[in-house]
Length: 279
Image 1 (cartoon, rainbow, N blue to C red):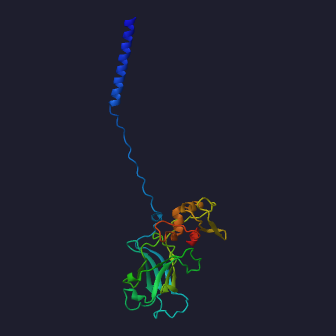
Image 2: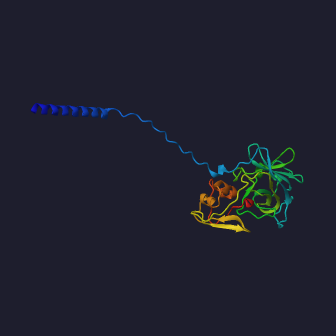
Image 3: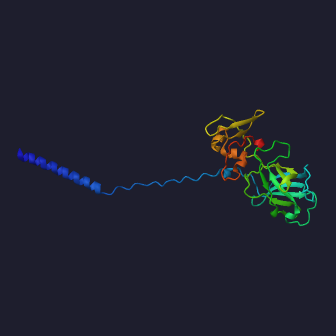
């Protein structure tokens, strides 16, 4: 009985030793390699300014008008030469820059090829209205660079619109060419008729009611939702969603939101438009 018990104990010790040895081998063995996943980089979001519609086509005339003298207050500082008048074209050049072409009604003064052809006058492109329609919510004015003025072989005066003006891809919110004396006092104007198609022909804002970060005042005129006055802390995202628009559509309606900032900025108590007819 004693020998039998010793045998069983020895067998148990032998089995335990084998188990430990096997276990030790598994602990010492290198772990099987596992495939590692490469982290996916999230692309940077495209700025809204770069998502605005691009409607320019090189070589295309995209607007026309007639620069005519308008009634204005006499001023002792008025230049001796009469204001420039004539047919106006807005043209896209081969580099997609937007230029204003004017075919003068009368011969230009001496000194053709430089700014002396417009002595005392300045030409501006603006969203002001000279066609009897309601004026813009936020005025926007860009001076035409008289230092870069040139004359085409067929006699058109060409002035480029400075690069970087907002909504270059669809500048149809600029409703007029104005001629001023010293930057003030409009002496001639040309309402512009645009030939560009609307990039959002079915755009119509609908007020779904105040939400977080869009609790400002909606403006309704004659049953038409025309504008919105932001509250403090309103965001472009929340306001656009309140009115069933995308952020791009809201900025297209309001190019002034990009003035002075690469990203559109709502300003407290400064009205924006929601009506394409008022763009």
